[in-house]
Length: 122
Image (cartoon, rainbow, N blue to C red; front, side, top):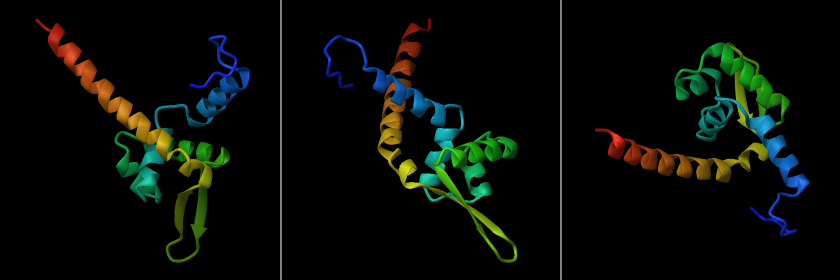
């Protein structure tokens, strides 16, 4: 993390930026939904199947929140039957590097935690 004032504390705009990010992405399901959509799973049931244990009601709520925050766009295509597709916005696509780093860290952390757990067990 960059710190231009060398006082050992974050600048207030960094804290605000982190808070803004967490407000948009917080919760158990938002990042997994975004990750699923980045793999071209853009219809409701495709997203639901890609994210285990995500209920239809919770998916609906999270999609509305993500749309309200400019992370996804909901597109309705007329026809028989009517089709609804969700697309990541340009802003959301900027998260791909962040999500990749989170996956990398999570895999390393899980591996390290497993090694610690197995070394402690009697």
